[in-house]
Image 1 (cartoon, rainbow, N blue to C red):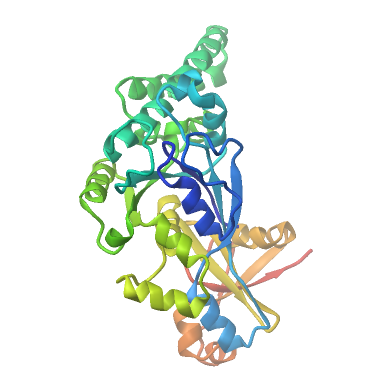
Image 2 (image 1 turned 180 degrees about the horizontal axis):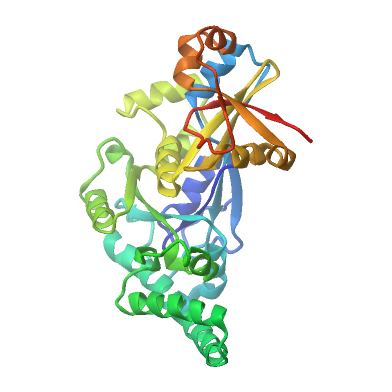
Length: 365
């Protein structure tokens, strides 16, 4: 289990180039004209995790199975997309299906690559896309509010609860604020999620810079970082051109190339790290002689539900979780050493899984 992230932005900002590089494929055609991507391309990539390799080495695992991250390359949005401009309705529908948004913003000068707005301004571009999402949400809510009002007049309690949430969301959108800023109670959470508002999606801003600015960014990426912070969001600086080159190199050459650029890790790793924090995700591991495998769950997941990620039967028949922290696993030289040192714990159904936990589930069918 990983997470599903839609790569969005205006045309010609480097979305498809980045997608190709991150997924190490040429599935998305990259071209210098708007709407070269129409149907969304989907790519799954392995999430790099050094802990998995260390555990596999200690356990002499025959195979390493990392968790997966899914990227969806969504065609460029343009001003007026919420009204159908540039096949906008179709593209907005694709955004509705993803868990989070990686919003790529052009922060590089290149006279050979046209800009759909005629000039370079990443903050304006971010606001353009954000506005289209807000307008699409307002239109969606307008239809739903009218339907809910009719039911509420008939003393429908569920419709009343839905109407209250929709009216608050609508008021926020009218102020020009995205739905993700709405404070939702536990009781309202399922109603709010069911609205599937585009502007409720968590956003990671990706500042796509030129190669020379990859390590420290530039004035344009600094503006993106300020824009993101002001909205309680995160931004990362990458160079899609560099990522494209990296995708073609063997591992040992990648390290040398990154070092020559003053980079300690590729953009993929930075995007994944930021994406995990964005969606509040953690990783637990299962380690044995056959394989060492990583699994992704949401922060706060309890042991039975984590077991269910592996197989639904594990959750149904959950008895306990034999648990070793990653630090103890490494310090003790593996599972046997951790057991002998008393570092393996037996955790029950109320145990909340921690990042890096090495788990072995006991269950009864």
